[in-house]
Length: 76
Image 1: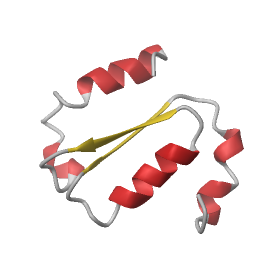
Image 2: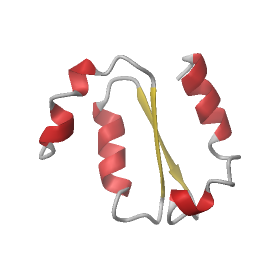
Image 3: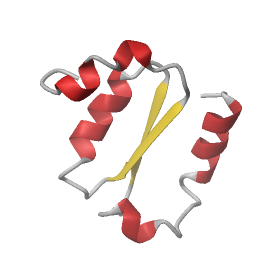
């Protein structure tokens, strides 16, 4: 990611499927997560509507379940 030396150098090293998700209202992490998913080859990004902090809503798996299965199966 531009401006983030911790991830920029690793982009070419990613060889695993990657799912990055964040609550739409989590303003501290939303844009960075979206950029990371765009720059990591093969990554999928999911923005969870009406969720501020994903950690507080882990029980709400319905929006994530299909994406997790795609990632595990390599369909994404």
